[in-house]
Length: 142
Image (cartoon, rainbow, N blue to C red; front, side, top):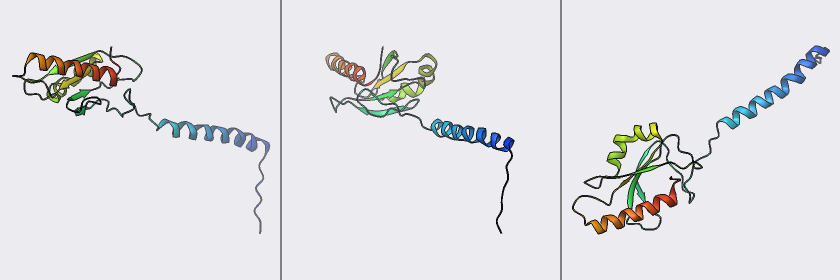
């Protein structure tokens, strides 16, 4: 016993339109889930919209800092940066406190874990210069 299906011209016209629409929709929705991961200028993955409390400098492993990239961070657009220096060397503390401002106004926040009260001005200046060089090489800052 065989089952024979007979489709008229209207049915074939409908299916000939339906198949490309289904295939196109499937390809569109499968691509929508893919999100390209943002990387810094040297290829390391970036955490957008999160405070990263421990970044180690690529050029000097003694330089440790916290960073916050606003939710609208794009690796192609340059954003302004604000550096924070906590009296106890807790670079992530001010970043966590003010991260909503970074998102609102589109600023990158960097907090030093090396600079704190009681250190010499010469040392603090050297650390800041290293930190500035590090952020210019790693992020797209204005």
